[in-house]
Image 1 (cartoon, helix red, strand yellow):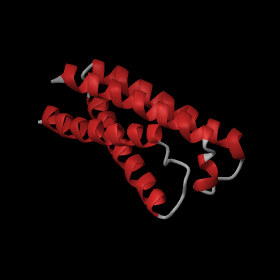
Image 2 (cartoon, helix red, strand yellow):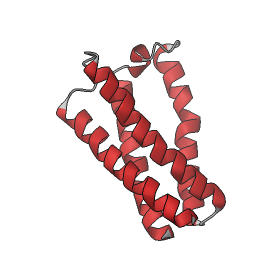
Image 3 (cartoon, one colour):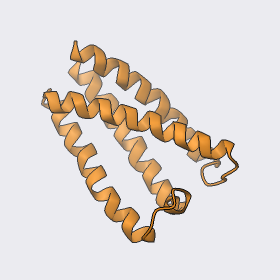
Length: 123
């Protein structure tokens, strides 16, 4: 089970990081009304990317921290899809390109599968 969760985490981490690259390009800090522009946005992502990578290491080691961080990453992917769908429905054009929609939709599917698999792994 740990191998399956590891590869789901790796796939989801890749999708989330690529989405965050897309977010920087589309100036997502404006959408969320974050202060500080690109500088603050990038600084904010330093601990997030570190946590994602640290989580992958912990999943590989089959630690409790890895299981918890796998759950957090899966929920983060589901949240990203949900919040951007909400913004799209409210008329914000930032993430309506086909590639943005594909990344978010695939991330939702992988996140759901990762969530279920991680819960089963916890048992």
